[in-house]
Amino acid sequence: MRNWATGAAVVALAMAGSAHAQDSAPDAPVSYDVSFPEAEHHEARITVTYRDLPAEPVTFRMSRSSPGRYAIHEFAKNVYSVSAVDGAGNPLPIARTDPYSWTVPEHDGTVALSYTLYADRADGTYSQIDTTHAHLNMPATFLWAEGQEERRIRVRFEPLEGADWKVATQLPAVDGEANAYWAPNLQYFMDSPTELSDHMVREWQVGDQTIRLAIHHQGSAESADRFAEMAKRVVDAQIAVWGELPRFDYGSYTFIADYLPWVSGDGMEHRNSTILSNTRGLEAANYQQIGTLSHEFIHAWNVERLRPAELQPFDFTQANPTPSLWFAEGFTSYYAPLALIRAGEWDLGQFLNVTGGTLNYIVNAPGRRYGSPQEMSLRAPFVDAATAIDPVNESIFTSYYPYGQIIGLALDLTLRQRFEGVTLDDYMRLLWETHGRSERPYTPDDLQAALAQVTGDAAFAEQFFAETIEASGLPDFAPLLAQAGLSYELARPTAAWAGPVGLEAGEGGVRVTQAPPPGSPLYAAGVDTGDTILAVDGAAVADPGAWSAATQARAPGDRVVVAVRRRDGSEVALPMTYAADPAITIVPFEAKGMPLTDAQRAFRQAWLGTAG
Image 1: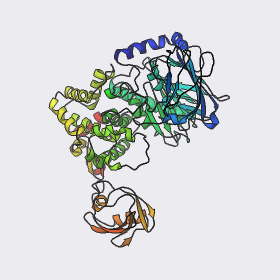
Image 2 (image 1 turned 180 degrees about the horizontal axis):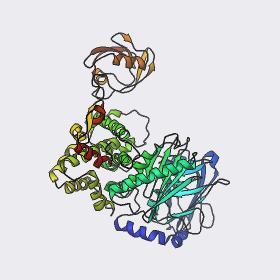
Image 3 (image 1 turned 135 degrees about the vertical axis):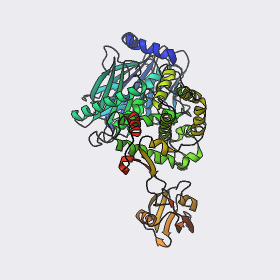
Image 4 (image 1 turned 60 degrees about the vertical axis):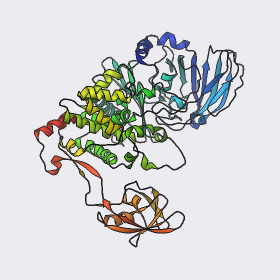
């Protein structure tokens, strides 16, 4: 995913890139010129010029997908006022046959296409233009010509007049030309988000490479300094997992961060950079943005270089699915909090709160009965910031992010239990050495083969994949966590439970806004979205608080009658039996008055980097 070449070609082009930036970029046969004359109205004016075109019609397209997202996005809806001229400046006719493309039938070998872009959403997928910044995700910003994807590209930005804007991007600069950058081809260009703003820059060296943090926020220089120090420690903790830093194509990696009230929260990885966005400032959020930074930087290894075969090359005209998101995104989600506690940015309580909450969600997720982690990965085009107006059955989906996170937890603890000296870190390093460093894409079979190799037990690897990846099985977490002096237990074993349900005040009762999940007492009773719960055993339920109070007054096994009005106006009496609350939690032994053994303390230290 987000690749622009493969195998040895990546290495060769990366080595040549910096050396030839000066003499190759000005002669690029594709050039973009970007200005912001109407920034207050969220508009940019963009001209893309293609030279040396063959004597045939040329079709310009707007992408329908974006690196790091798996769903379709209709970026073309924000393109208008399109015109074209030839090399002599003569107007050219434009034909439209679909919503996503503009075709120039005749030209003299040069076509300069100009258009206006509207953009007002800053996150990892879309673009935003205003008087404070130009936050540009390339597929949401730039038209491109079919059949010309391998040609070099030059882009020049004209910052907003009177604004103290500078540029943050992974694109290499054109030597001697202000605000001009270049890309070896369309794949790399589209994978290079760019921020123009008055941002703060902090950078440091890791060996001969530069890590750069560009923060556009309303906070102080001191808060930027503190966040940069946190980022340094997290980066170091992640390098310890993989054994080395990836070789970035042009010698640097850039975190591009927008922490502003008018942006949307997100994180999106790219080959040599990432987009980070949050509606709160660093201090207001107590620097919680470090969690997203941790997740996205792991992608510099996992996904950007160690990547599924199905995501190569990235197709900007359609969704890009793979059955391996449980690994690509899920294992990344496992390592993000692990890196934070190992780096000393989180304590044990913070780690267990997040990990325990995720474990509770997955263990009790109804979606696991409808599909394996591979199946859930293939549903990504329907859920990854996808939009639709028709209702869906949310119960059938379990997100591959937390699903894979808990599989990573299970595998790590199992490896440490069954194979002396073997951890998930060893598995990840092996995959990096065999597939990541060389950028040889992997298949699910490759992931299984690597597990067999690192454990020396092919039968174990086969069983793990058959039961946990191709099916929906999970291990018994109690003995796995007990190795680290952690108790896996029910959070509220004596509490009654009818199931999670969305409720709002309705006429004569509470209306169900989100369907109860399969397996819950409400689901078994026949309650669904659009129903209004009127009473429980004759006692009126006037608001969501009354429903909660009715549940708290019961015990597991209690039987009641729930009076419900259907959306067609009919009323029914539905028998329901409360269950025990299935929520689980993770509690340190010492919090229960149980001292740790030396073995448990050592296990916890080796796993988390801390014994307490």
